[in-house]
Image (cartoon, rainbow, N blue to C red):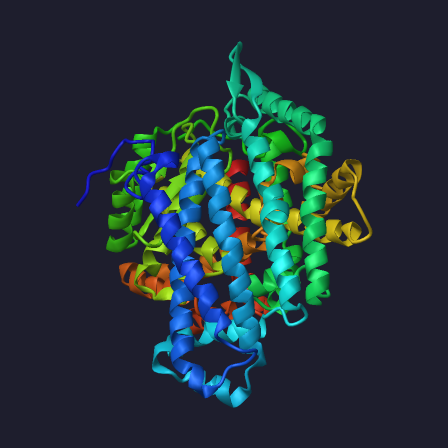
Length: 598
């Protein structure tokens, strides 16, 4: 069994040697070029529909598409990692452009393939799906056929694809570069520190209220200074998205995210309905915590504040040992996996300026590895962020044995795996707590997660809904964006958060992720779904790990309703399913108030 390594800087050379000047990576791009060129040639051989004589060609075509997706994923992950560790790396920016150009061509051809599938007669289509080599891709192929861009001509599809590279996606990249370039000057213990945005955000859990408060307002002043620029970026991203949706005939901008998450609108609406019923216990928690901090109501800059002295600081080495120890209580495969991640340099956690502010996990499917990126500054919150991203990496690990097209899973399920690993840490930490103070500390951290998912994420969802309604009528001003954000926060938090950041629309990166509109509700779905899975895990003990791995492996080839029914036997369009998870979280809130009142 591998030892735990103290290394805080990842090793990207194991994927491609030489960083942004990697000859090996250029060879990868050349191979990707050859694969895309082959696909373009193959698609030209088809007419507007398929016949039974095309079976052999279709099998080859599908395999080629699956291979290209893997090569693109490998390339995109590498460039993402390079730009995260050094946002000013111009060579990496050039490489991103090269990969984006290949991806644009690939997406054009994939759109053509989907259109051909849509035009194919039903009897021919069924015979294609019965082909032995394609049976395992039945779900994906049907999804392609159903979700094809039926309303667009080939010329329109090509134009949209071209515009996405230097228009749509470019705005998202510009946002990331802009945030990464910002320096934040903050007084800490009488000394001025020059920090990245990520480092400044980490101060929200600092033990000193004055530091938390200053970090909050310094960041707010920066966002206010740059609000016009950020509003332009957001408006352009949304404007492009709305125009494409209009072309596709989508009535609502939420249609595309629901398709990508393989979720019914009925499921989403039921989830939010249940959450809206259960706001009060979490408002009570916020009020009680505020009282413990000497206030009558919760101020935004105090939300992440530690309320006890217990376990406030933790070193990276201690975090690595704890994660390994706690994961071992769930299953041997998870324990071995996380030891490998630490030992083989899969984690970039160094606390330094001039790196990206956004934690993430990047998967490398061709080499069967992942890389986790974050800034570790010694807090329990950092530990949970690390665990969260390692959960994504374990999901990637589970998919190693899954073939081709079935490796891709929706965001809603991705957030389930990451949240599940957080549950393991919370459960074990609670069991090992030696005092009431430690239990209060752990419950507080758990409840922060509940508030984030049931209130903060809800505010993001409400804001995005309302913003898109107004954006259809024209540009939405920065001042109006601030108003929409404030209204959404007040509604989602049921008025229980004081002095909220009206610039949340600026510093929340999810609004600017062009590949994933409405990247908010998947977190809440994943959170509650993970609670249901974890309840099953506690019933079965270590033997559940095999079942859990099977669930993750199915996540790329089923819609979420069928996945939950198959592995948990639950109907997620019913309020009863969501109430089970909510009740567990309500118990945490009640226990917190009980412990802090005695």
